[in-house]
Image 1: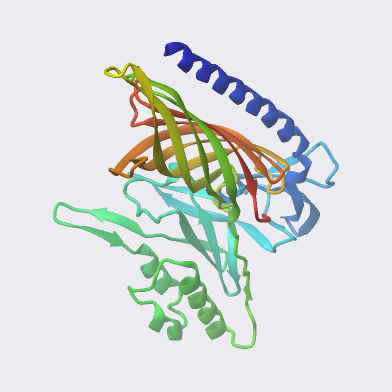
Image 2: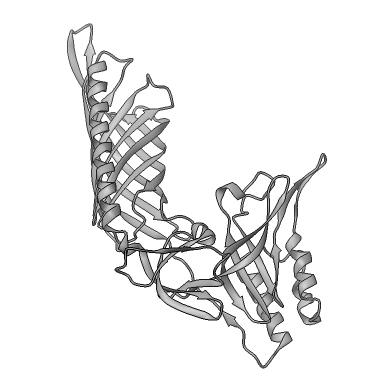
Length: 390
């Protein structure tokens, strides 16, 4: 039995090595395509060129800019030496803003690039926070902060989770700041209630109302863009082989599976990580050694498997023909025997990897029952076909 497991491990190591090689090759081939047409804004000057496209958190710290798409040299800019930048294809604009970010015990002032939502007498920006900036004292949906700009000054809109010995609650600091900022136009104060949601559209509408109140004849600018999720979805088939270190009486264990998968990436939050979900039917066959009759008895198991995985994509270029990946997570398995005499629900720990080749997907992964090393395992190799365009 150990030799069987060693063979599977050696095959998995070989597959990972091939994936890493693919990663290096694809990374060098797609570097130029990561740059999208855009511009940077310096003091009084707008310079056209190409900006390396990544998620909004990374863009908030710095950007890589080059004047030509074919140029090998690029220049890195931070909010300290640029007023802003933007992408011309989807109208995405960022500006350098002063922002206060609350941590567990302190509030830190920083300068970052924030996405522009509204401009006028009162301008509104949105800043996506990094993982390190999301602490236990903050709400679970505290993934961003808003920034207001008025007369050259920046004001951060936040909400915090508060906890005392008697209760837990929410400190809606943004309500008080909005009331202070809108106080010179009383018509806007009617809508600044404690029930105002901490979401894009309600805050944008309030800023728009204020700007119209301040100057009814001048239209303010709304930047409307919705970053759509990238979804790879399609069909897949797999070959499976089981390993049961505690069941020496089992032999010839193999099976086949067919199902459907969804690979969902939210590019504004991360272009490297995606959510992988799926559902498939698996039929596992094996021989069971009957000690009384002294012969093998064939049997089979029916499985419905539902993987819920986090996937790391090694190439963040949307239309890359080659995109290796690694994934990890849990797979819920509903199983019964060939006579449907029972129903078991078992969570499996899943780890694996693979690569997209255009619309084709090759994948290798292991399902391990629970987290114990000496547990039943299912080794899988599959091929998939993506049905949709990105």
